Length: 228
Image (cartoon, rainbow, N blue to C red; front, side, top):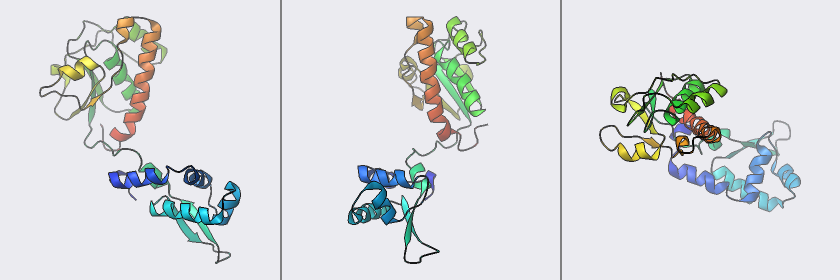
C-alpha cells in the first residue's frame, strides 16, 4: 500500500481495525517481531478462535500478512505491515516550495514560526504581517536566542511585499486568518495565542512551544516533495 495514495476509506478501515483493544494488542505484539497465531494467543492469554477472528480483521485491513514457515511448513507466522500504519497520516501537501507564516504585526509568532521551519526542514520560509510593526518584539528575540534561533530585530514586512503565488501561507494568529480573505488567503490556520498581549517570558515560551509542535507536525506533510 502506497502511503501517499491511501484513500479516506482505506484509512478509515485501518482505524476501525485498530479500534478494538485486542487487535491493538496484537499489533503491539507484532511491532518488534513476527509471531504465530498460537504464540500470540499464549502471549496475550487469548482463546485461539478469538485470535483467528482478530487476525482476519487485521489482515483484511492490510495491517498484517501471513507467511508460511520455512522450517515447519505447517506453521504460519504473522508479520506487521508498517506501511499500513504510516497510511494513517494525512496525505502530503503537494507543490510546496516555500512556506510563509503570517500574523498581524510580524513581530513574534510569524517570526518564530519561520525560524523554526528553516531549522526543522532546512527549507525556504518567510514571515509577514497584515499590519507589520517597526521591529520584532524584544521578548521574541530573547526567546529565539534562548532556543538558538536567529531573528533579525528589524526584519518585519507586509504580506503584499512577501507572498508569492506558489507559497504555502500559514496564518499563525486568528486576526490574520480572518482578515486575509482576498487573493492572499491562508491555506492553513494555527490559532496560537498572542504572547504580546500577556507580555511575559512565560507567554513567549508557551507560544514558542506551540509553534515548534505545529511545525514538527506540518513538516513531514509539506516536505515530502521539493520545498527548496
